[in-house]
Image (tube, rainbow, N blue to C red; front, side, top):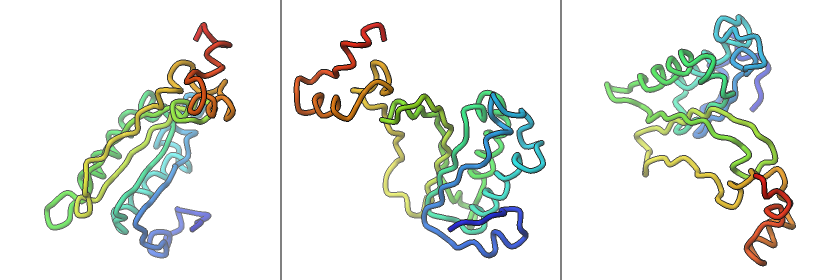
Length: 173
């Protein structure tokens, strides 16, 4: 569902309750390339608070929040505040969520770009059936990332010689 303004006073009230909530909040206030204002940015920097309000009022079973690596490097206090808030949500005195965070790079998971992202994952304890495990980078992509690997090379790797053609082209990696 799309909402054009999370600052609308009725946003949380009108938003549906969902089992899985996925949201990215504006990166400009936290990015190395951005304005470096963090949550002091009156428009983009405070969107995270509306997302946290949604999570606290609608309590999805699972959520994922995404932002740039600058959230860790440039504004660790904001990440700490997010984690503290989400871990502090309680129902009848018990924590609602197990909350974890990690910084993952898209190039390690089959995407052709070097894109580091911070992910905050929350699992509702009431429905948790196993411990959450972060994905591990694909071993066949670890030598040089995946920027030089084509689908034909992957097919050859899995069904052919067992070696990526780009290994021959990029031995310096």
